[in-house]
Image (tube, rainbow, N blue to C red):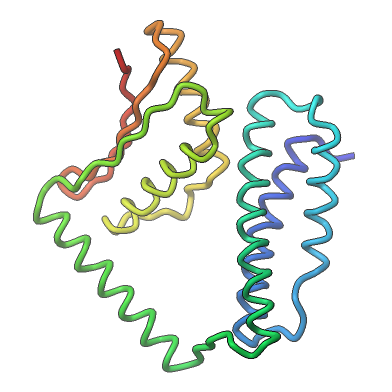
Length: 203
């Protein structure tokens, strides 16, 4: 029988796969929506909603983040499925899709070059005291960190939402214990082309 951490890992993996397969479905690469994966995620989410008391604080934090992400995706998938059924969804194939991607890449390059020329890009700041009960704040911080790295041209393949969540949870608790403080401010900034994530004690 799988452990709680293994099940949470499976949910995260399935959510990523679900997004990929839905993108294929909306793009015309699949004939049917990936209902099997959706059913498997629903089953695990239902199980841990009912067994919430068995989860440790970091597991509950991770589970809450995963269910929020899944709920957002499901809402998007539902709307796009409706558009597809009504024939109003916009599709981009072949050359058109490549052209869109090329334009996006150029925009990213321009933004990255502008940030590098400025030396310091505008910093993103977020104050956190209980990350386990503030998943929306942590998600915004993650998105800001990920976007900053992408704009700077840094590799983001090893960056995962769950490991980032655990880092913020651990770092916040460490600083609160060491410095006897309540609030911790996280700052994402780009200095000389390198993205930095700082954790500062709020007095």
